Image (cartoon, rainbow, N blue to C red; front, side):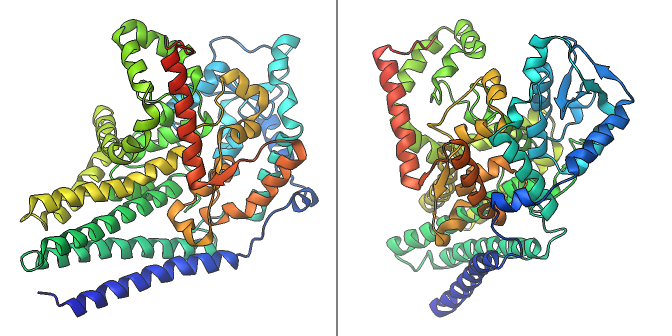
Length: 525
């Protein structure tokens, strides 16, 4: 049996290593060779990238001009040129659904493309170019007018070009600082994993001799540590899938896309360590970033009939068709929405994790995503092996499972409060206001102290992350001041509140909608 003194030595040593990794990350970020960005810096630098792309597109177009957008064509507009994406949509790394949403509307995706892609990707579009956009119809051309290049959107484009030119997006593959921070983050979650296993082994060996109370305290500590390990693994998966760890110039999905993951690092952290489908996450999360809070389109905010996140959901064709096909859904929805402000926290924390397991497994099975099925098998092999250490006491096993899942369930609340109780828009409204303003209206930041930044995993800088999804996590604070400057200059609200206040805002919004449903002020269908 492991003695108490040896146990304490093991735990204190691991905690020391974990503290060192967190402390190192905080101090190293302060020593960054890249400084805080201001609009003065941005305006002093002239980027030639847009002029170079114009010449590149002009040469590829070979004088072809598009004077009329042909209905039914899967075309998108990028920097004044038309591209046919019909053949490529199936291989789009960010998901077919997202690209077709834009192509079916023949939308201008200039800002969206810049937000989600490394500038080298522009060269890969040349084979899809149709021609220079020069519409003859004033009515049609007004849709593609350069309204979005004025004001805030113009500053946003300048800032994006500046960040790329100065190396702010460089990941561990090209930047020593990013490599060191990545290393220490991985050492941090490794310490958490070892700590959770060590606590479980100690608990197993002391179960027979220890009292009930001591056993349950040790069980709670082990389960809590495992929950934090899973949360931190999820943050690393999030960073990796956004190319914020290694800035991959991702290729299109190959014919082996169901066998070999397109993002190996994201798969390891998201599927093997966290237990979800990395393929599903990339598809859904890409849609979430591009179509944030759009009713019944943002895959991460489709909760009817359990919760209503926007009153606009009830006027969508999708919802009305669902109610027509299944009439009892209307009554069920009214019953559930009337108490949604009570069910939000319990369902998100307790049920959210198990819901993730089910929908991710079914997605992988239905779409035959072999590598995700293998990854989830490895995840469950590890989790059940840990649980088997407590096989002599069923109630300890149950307590361990519950506490570990509730702990990581806090992550589900963290994911929601940065967007709930904000605005939601239709595609036409999104196009009219431009990508920058649209993201500012649908996202909020969470105020945090340096000592708690690790707990939020970068989600406290949700505004910066949504505007620059590929920016490494440790550089998000560097762009916050310049975004505040842009918002102040153009009269745009920059919303940032404390964690508890964000939860209060969400619950209050849910309560208002519940009250309107109860009184009949909202027509459910």
